[in-house]
Image 1: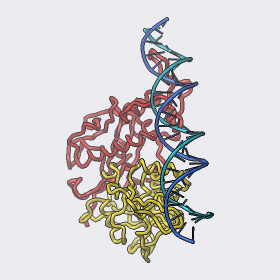
Image 2: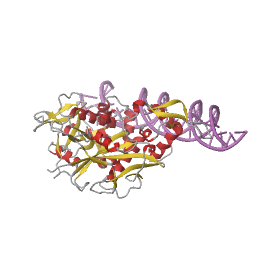
Image 3: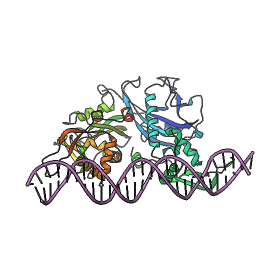
Image 4: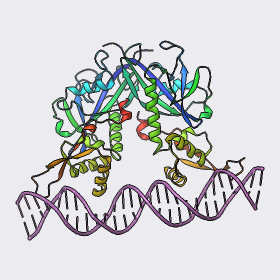
Length: 219
Length: 219
DNA sequence: TGAATAGTGTCTCTTAGACATTATTGT
DNA sequence: ACAATAATGTCTAAGAGACACTATTCA
């Protein structure tokens, strides 16, 4: 029984131009040097407290995304997915507002519907992440992490609609947000500058800032 | 950066005496020789096609549970969870009808609410598995995998109620099962032997036998 | 004042739960 | 016939969506 290659990869998702986009990083090492791929790397047993910590480390050098919403997606494994040998990748996905992302030569955003030539099984991983996010969006407050704070309810609704790919009922949407109870109105703060009624500005309640559900804390 | 210990563990759950129970295996090796723990072991890079395959191999020698419902729960990691060193455990959970489980000296069922002295972080892992199962039970057909086929709808409802810990409305339950569309009545087959009206027997539709959702296939 | 969008009240339709009724067995 | 449980019909209450109306801003 030979050694297992242990890596962590991060699917950093954001919403830009009403489309879900993923951050790709130009690889600096073999294999696939110079190719765009998911940011990731080996687990560092000397410094990482766990794989989640490793995922945060992978994101650390990305400007602005110090403490994003981060959740474990799953683990991908097998003998063929990495040319170096039998490998395991523990994959996390992160959600950040697109205002925090600054693209660079070695870090670009790509629409998740237009990914070609991704190495390893990264295309499959991105697809799984999108499915998870879209699925969760239909019944949770997950999409709030894609909205730069502070935001208005109409702005947030646009985000939900972009993710779910369908228009939502305004009254139902607001009722749902109200009962999810994760947002708080910022007293006296309103959007302005438009030729119409200003909208109340909201932010995620502190307790939910980088919230993880209880079940996810365990992992 | 030293090596990562790569293992797979399986939380095999069943329902006995109206309580969720987990299969524990008496360890034959260090560390924790002789202690009851989750069945598991090293990933075999020479024979396992992936970690899911490894989980099936771990279950293979358990009588009767050749092809259970099996889903990835998540990956647990860190320097302290295993005394041998920095380790990763990819955990799967399996659901089987209790009629398939034969206990032995080295394989016993324990109620998930009465687990003491589990080694590693196995108590935490079992708790996460239970939470996942109970959570999914409220909106999916997951619990059908705990019912020995063929079964009646009243029997299945008892299973749901045991998992969810609350009585369910009969009419709503049957409506829900009907729209989930995973069961098929076995023509002419009815429960019998009781001094009351026999109940229609059902089985899981072939397409859903060991069903995984699309998102889970990918992992 | 009018255009544009925010926010809310209310009606209807769908769905979930409560209850009642009928059906079928063994004793 | 009676007890026991299966299965279904129907009424009611709760929730979601559709629509309309009011509110507030800037041009």
